[in-house]
Image 1 (cartoon, rainbow, N blue to C red):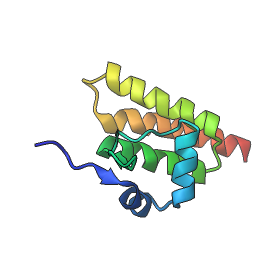
Image 2: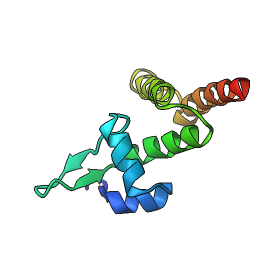
Image 3: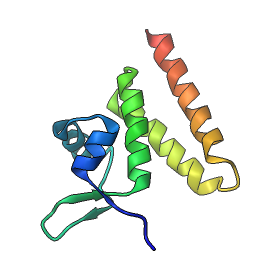
Image 4: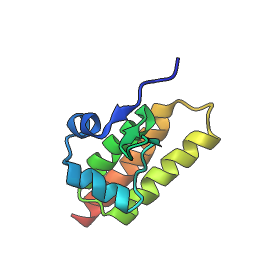
Length: 106
C-alpha cells in the first residue's frame, strides 16, 4: 500500500504556513509537489512534509531562501548517499550547522 499523499491545505495546517507561503516556496523551486491531480491540485508526500518542516524551521530562524536550499539539498544528498546512517544523525548535524550560522549572523 502506498503512503497517503497530502493535500496542500493539509500541509499548510501541519506546517503552520499560509497558502501564499507554500505557493511562494513552490515558485522558487524550494519545494515541489510529489504529484499534481488532473485538476492541477498539488499533492505532497511525507518526505515533502519533512522538507517543509525543515524549511519552515530554518526560515523562522532567519535563514534566507538560497541558504535554505543549500541545506535542504545537502540533507537530501546525504540521505541518498549515506543510507546506512540514521536519518536523525544526518538531519541533526545539518540543522546544527545551519543554526550556528544563524547565531553568528545575529
